[in-house]
Length: 197
Image (tube, rainbow, N blue to C red; front, top):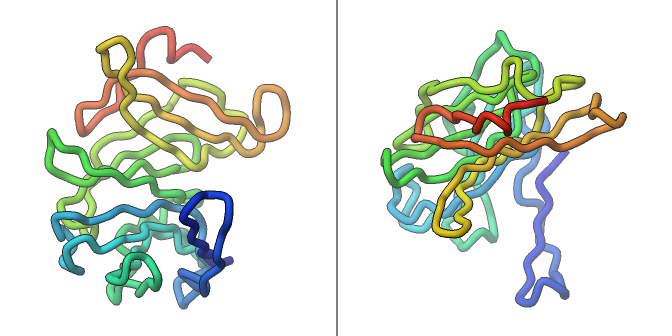
């Protein structure tokens, strides 16, 4: 499994480019996310585009690759993986974003039937911050592909945590669930009604 690559100026007409990230000794390339490192926190260059993805080999680990040509080509980081936990079989799908209040990158990672949050100043060394999900929401299958983001409505900002379930959705097959709450840069705390399964 690879990361394909296409570009468009209008989101209608697409130009396919060579494969962005290919399997290597760490395994095939599962899902993840990409960010623009505007402040060069990782040291790959100002405005480098950095892909954070799961390397799926014997164990699932998190790796990074960087682009210094506006995302045309990506180079895997020589010291991959950047995050491992051999005790968790389903350890994948990193979603990363910059959290201004704590001045660090935040990673939401699917870890079996929970989401674990990690923090990093440089995208290379990660520290576990907290875990979310035990006893909350649907747990019919493995939790996958998390996404955490702020949403402002009527002047009030809440954080939304999306989580896919595969398989074992409440109506059969795969499903997506979400939680509404607050995130302080370390811990996601769901609103009371959001935490009801």
